[in-house]
Image (cartoon, rainbow, N blue to C red; front, side):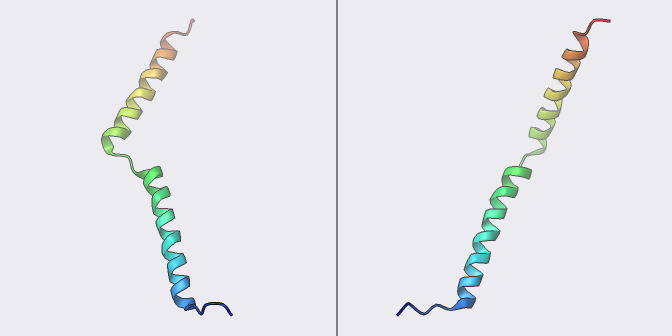
Length: 57
């Protein structure tokens, strides 16, 4: 016969693991500092300006 488990504990453990996985995703998605965002924006602007400047009329 199998081992007896507490279903409440199993449910809470699974919910905790899901929450931790979601936190990891959010840190990767939104976890940039203001300086990193500004640097990325400046780089995008620089590239766009360089492309626009190299176009012929």
